[in-house]
Image 1: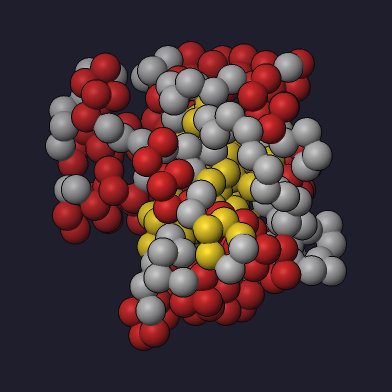
Image 2: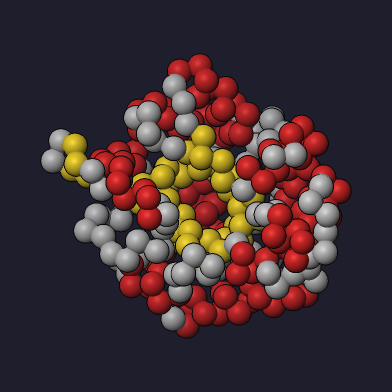
Length: 271
């Protein structure tokens, strides 16, 4: 199955919510864990137990594992291995992006199904040109994975670049147009996704790209379920709302984490 098909199936089975696995030092301390590889390992095991197979999507933040160097990356590999075949799709938040052979190397690391770092989807940065991301899309097509391209991000600084105009379109609009073309004719939707923050307030861009929309900003960044309902009213079936700290602060007890997820999922449905 393509990622677009698997994404739709995961939403139907578990709901749209994506839980970010972000082992920030603040969260480790809150959970009573050391800011060390041992603390990282314990945190990760609790998250896998709490979320894998209970939510549609989990989203590890690569930076928080990489800051511990190779032992931290080994913990990330263990997380990915433990999450496979649980029913939850793994979206790695790595925001990779480069050109030529370097892009191919990144794609081989994360989108080759034989790699220990293989994931269901990865976030990528189009600043070097959206066509430079072709190696990611090509690798994703081989492994039935997904690629989420930054388009309208949740951080306020992003507007300086994303709202700039080129060829009578905004940069964000050009990215969305490219993804829409890539997904043309796919059913139930394509596998080329966009990252669109729930905190952007409003947009005149066409968010219907016939592909998935990863939507960060829910919870600690200030967006609520009503913002998602309003902003994505035309494409509710494509939205994967992502929340991290607002759920993780309920830990470390697995039961408390699952209860928090259930409350947020209910709020999304009832908003």
